[in-house]
Length: 166
Image 1 (tube, rainbow, N blue to C red):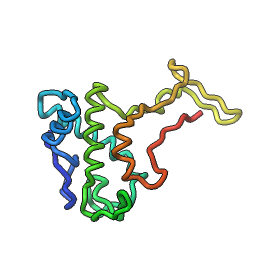
Image 2 (cartoon, rainbow, N blue to C red):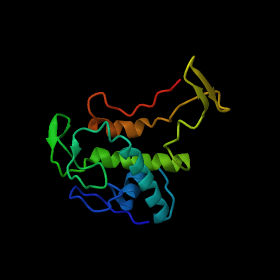
Image 3 (tube, one colour):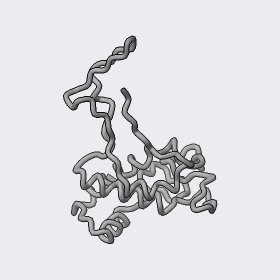
Image 4 (tube, rainbow, N blue to C red):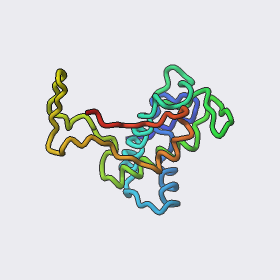
């Protein structure tokens, strides 16, 4: 699997904001051990990008190019009170993707659970819900380290929040 990095110039078929080498450096500086194979790290980066792309409705601004494959670059975007160029890929976004990739590695799979599959039966009139075997727990894991990086890129009050539906 080839990593195609978006650098802010609308790279066709981009699937990442960072390279495997950048992920290696980021992880090493923080004491994380990643898989040895570059292909395995590429998969982690793709899943990390998938996670960050899920914030699309909460990101500031709009896509800079109508046909870009990822959500960034965007405009107008303000970080710490300063407007960034519409061709910038913020370091916070890169860090969020890399931290999400690390979280995928730690989790041993995926960090975007399908939170709706545990509802076995719903009834609309005189509301009734029957859950699967997990007692109706509906949750999505949280990743505070990823959130810390991605927070400056969001609209005011625009975090990705998954709440129970009862």
